[in-house]
Amino acid sequence: MVRKAVIFLTVFVIGAAAYLVLSENGLYHVQRLQREKAALEHRIALLHQQKSDYEAKIVHLTNDATIVEREIRSQLKYVRDDETVFVVSETTPTGAP
Image (cartoon, rainbow, N blue to C red; front, side):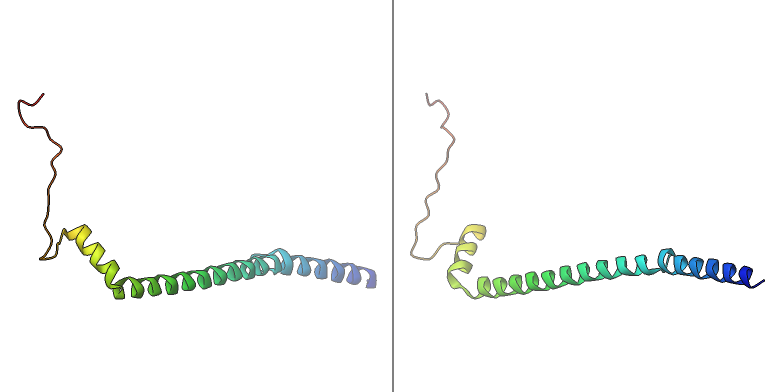
């Protein structure tokens, strides 16, 4: 009878250990989740750094008068009062050789 109890207890302990290691909430699953969490925390840190870099670049671009003027001239086709605009057409006049 004692032998059966020892065998039963051994099988029970092995089964419980296997369950704790291999189950859905077992050790392997928890370790995988911890690795995934660490990877995501690293990615978040990188994204925060990237966001800070972009914010600094935005501040620089909006406060640099040379860049602002260049973009206004380029995109909105603005000119200064003392400048003369020449428009060059690449089309050939009718009847030209």
